[in-house]
Image (cartoon, rainbow, N blue to C red; front, side):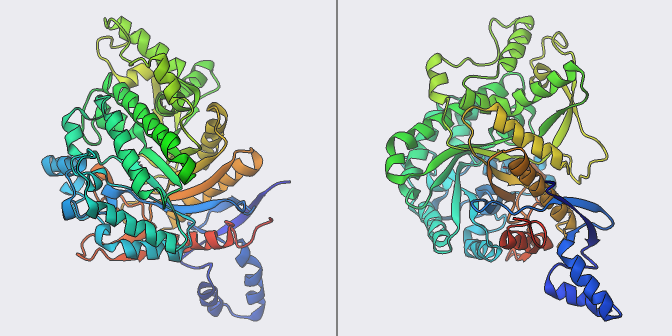
Length: 531
Ligand code: NOJ
């Protein structure tokens, strides 16, 4: 049975799927015959961009499938020094190096959600989501990072949010750490310092204890790859370090160790009484081989191993991916190092880390092609993560994109879901914890976002129904336009527009919000589905 349905896509300017839009168009039609024609075609309309033909999966989302929206503390809260909150890495980075951020923006006020959180929850409620993915600000709860000094006002802030979510029947997916490291730990070396794993486990224990009553789904760390590659490797995010050859791996080591220690705290001390589950959010673009040549196929495998694999392999399969061990090891020796630049896990650490995830959390935005690049002996003497990988990555210029890290490639998303499903041991469920479209204008008429999300959700249904991948949830990034890290407020991903020039940070739902609300209500990408 072919589950695809081809449907002509109409301009949302001309045709709107809701009843008033239908009436508006109908009033321009001349006779009743046209009206009945309209009645026939409306169920097939998919509001994306003009003059395109789209094919969307016409099956219903499974009954247990959950829809959600996501945000993160530093990106939305503001209140950067309110009520006893301690300084964190991004407070320090944006204040100390304002020129590293587009327009010298910072998160001091952001969406002002420290004060406007009730409005955010109302937006979620009206949207009809099953879950809300939010993160806790470590230094709001522990101003100095350590559990000897707890900020009750910070705890109360999150309890209020969690209680209100509960009252509105919205499940919280709580991330303990979304890049806003208490500054004191940065001064101790940040993620280079393996001791951070123990401090993180202590913080996690406190959160499980005080918030566990409300939270059944815990995410330890958000996208360690982004932290390690951009924060410690190529300098694109705080702390902006350029230690590509060593920093990325040492950061990865500490991150997976920190995750594992927090997982075991939950497992040993809280699981029996709280009955929740714990995972880590891992991100990757899909790496597609540039050709069928064996060296390009290997290049794509290598790209996946150096991106997602550095974090997923220790957690799901045990130890680093062999390809990473081999490549970094060989280059390190050629460079004159006495041992590999890749830190080694002890056998005990391999066991401690392996199996520390109850389900897989996936963030993804893009796809790239991978082509073999012979770097084994190239530039020896310059330790470099990308030379270690030895892959030329590039995008097809025809792919629709506004910013350089998001591209409309739904087949890549489907391949990635299949890859995660098949590559990692013990994965019996995948939740998409972030996916979304970036523009620069925050237009309310965001048809490109609707196209992107509808096609990605369609690819998700293909993966579920046709490939047998058990993907049980989708979380759009983001509920709100927000502080997009070093891009400041220049890149917008919200389904709700925020006016950053207005002291009140007025929120206005975009068309994608109404469209997503409809999908959630119908549990179907079209007006009606086959099952
Ligand atoms: C990754 C991060 O988790 C989130 O903080 C960021 O805003 C989005 N993806 C978009 O870059």
